[in-house]
Length: 503
Ligand SMILES: Cc1cc2nc3c(=O)[nH]c(=O)nc-3n(C[C@H](O)[C@H](O)[C@H](O)COP(=O)(O)OP(=O)(O)OC[C@H]3O[C@@H](n4cnc5c(N)ncnc54)[C@H](O)[C@@H]3O)c2cc1C
Image (cartoon, rainbow, N blue to C red; front, side, top):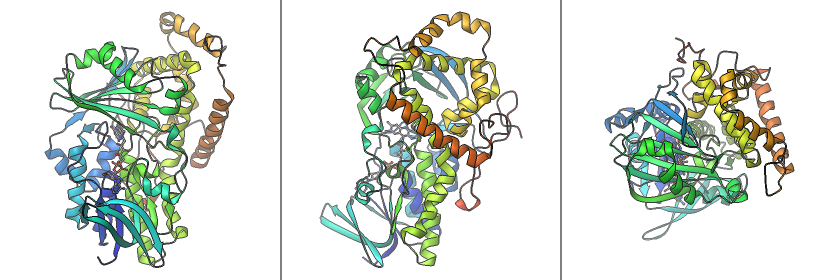
């Protein structure tokens, strides 16, 4: 086969979006995947407003709408089986005020076929096993049903998902997968809950992990649970046992799911959560999506970052192919662009999750969750910010504002009266007395980790805003766009009293 401009390895959202963007720029692209489409991918199937914005830009909007997916416009947050807050998905800037639940077996095929329609050559059943760069080209080696295979390109975009074999081979993966979250998913039928309402479930037994119910609109639901594996190991939590127990016993889950029946198996997959990754590029190589560790640690969403990293990589690849400089030095423009777009927010998410990973302080975190839930019921602006962070449409670093912290803590006297027991438990945990296994409430490793991540996030805040800690009081901006990144500008103006973005 003649040498192509770009081989994209992996045709999930990241790979197909890269192929569409490059083919539309007139580049010769080969998109290959080990699977044959349609194929399933273990996922919650939730396309957030941010994902929808990029999918529309990629020309998939009409086809997606044609599948008549259900719009998710409301969310309900539960703690230990009790509904603690509910409200609309915030409408932010030009983004839709809803998400869609589209099974990945459908959504990924739409993207894959769109890549072919845009002019990319597609190859299924090709498992890539390694990359070899030589002079003016790079070779992707692999296997097909017929035997060993190889394709040559000027540049390779690695999009082979979590635990990427090719990224590991390049030595650019950030750390071992031991710290990654892991998530389980199952499909249910005959679900009685409102089809436009997603449920998020926190519980003392598996916090800081969480469970979800995402109605699929056909009377079914995608249900799942995810958690950081190092926390699960440290505290002896078996994710599958917790998932089954939650499905069976949790009052909130029962209220949403009634007598729903499971069909298919419970399946799991790792989530490569962002940890301040390395450059994600090498000579003649760019790494996008899960292969580049772009999952938001806070909500476990990775489709929007897969799509956005793909768009950024495509613009850098196109520029590099034009100049003919495909060395890592030129490709570092990709790193600069994704850092400008994601780094601060994903670091803030990572910080929040790292803080909550100390389960010795569990009563304190659950109290903070209750306070935030109560405040969001009383204060639409707070609800829009908090809900927006959870939905990925408001930058996570807005959660670090002093104003938000003060608003969380200031509660009506009735709240404190109702939750005096919780306050006492939190104080006992803080004093390090509540743990029969004798752990201190502030283990040194955790404190070091939090301090390092706090400094990194604060530094990012100071760079972005000049003055940190005040972002809650200024008009909220969804992200600091660099004009050249080719992505939709997402600007979040002030909210009105109902939590809607003001015109
Ligand atoms: C249980 C669970 C729930 C989730 N829920 C959500 C959610 O609701 N919303 C959200 O935004 N994100 C969610 N995520 C994260 C989301 O699934 C990923 O971030 C997203 O799939 C990343 O897309 P990708 O294209 O980078 O990788 P993938 O979707 O994993 O695609 C990688 C592709 O590469 C192919 N491939 C792999 N190895 C090779 C190889 N050697 N050669 C050739 N091809 C190869 C695979 O077949 C696949 O098609 C969830 C993840 C999990 C595990």
